[in-house]
Image (cartoon, rainbow, N blue to C red; front, side, top):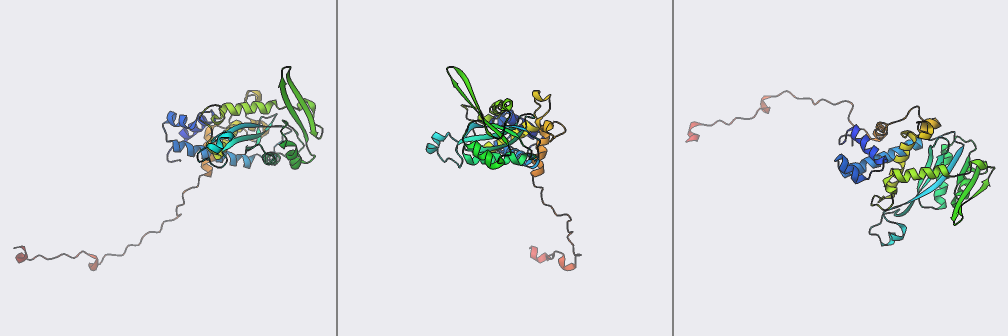
Length: 303
């Protein structure tokens, strides 16, 4: 990859990805190969996920909100049975997110179905990112959450659910404490729902009624991971006085740029294996026997 695109062009391509441009639009805009765009997208997504898992630990979070946002891979669930050569993971793709309310840092995320298994994975990732102190958690009323929260945190958490319903009389909110003693004034899911809107606006694969949807679940995860890396480390939030979530939560001293993201990719790129020393080839001195033999032509042979 480094031999195909310059560092500046790779940074520009990644910037276009996180700003919601499709793969083919990037190909046409930058006049580069589509395979190059796909390869860069995969490398960036893998580097983003690896960096998050490496650095997002022992975070001082106290207020967390979780939610899920729907999309699909290859085909919608109802159409998968009639789809041609549908890959594994085709159908509905739910992105589970856990957001720190105060810093807007995305603590954990998962991509999969809407099962209890995925809720367990999200809570496991959330707990791994925290410093062990008690938190207050709010989710919607999805049945998978309570069991997953209790399995991950036991009783060492203040957990509440918030269910919104709408009818002709307007919106109704049902807030319930499930574990511990959550503070009623902090029981809401507004921040994580706003984050979901940013995902749908910023990741082209979530745009409705387009052909930019993911064809494979791995590509979907790459897009999500890259977007959250950009959101956490490179995006200046107005509500945070121009700082990034990583700065607010203590993971960065300054705002990072897209060149930094390219650096993360290069750190994971294996370097070519070359010998440290080269053995010089010994040459033997020439002898008479090594010289080419000259055929003697007699005058009578030329007649």
